[in-house]
Length: 111
Image (cartoon, rainbow, N blue to C red):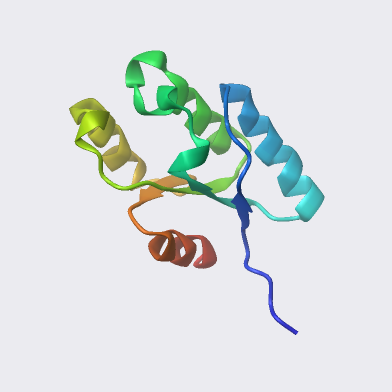
């Protein structure tokens, strides 16, 4: 019998900040508190801090006690402020970003 990973790979597009609540629902349905997101499910607004999307989305993750690992490669188009924001998130326990899926999975499995 193969052991299930301690997280859900989220493949549904995230279009609005309140889509974080779908992760909350899934956490109760699947009895898991951790999620892996690929950059492809995140809207362009997530990467533009002026929209406040990323900050509000991450705050919901924190408020509901979820752990989320987001995988996206470095992109100079994201801007310096976004890179600073990502750097600040690395110290937290709720939402972190990774360049590789393997690193993200290792962090999620470590909790």
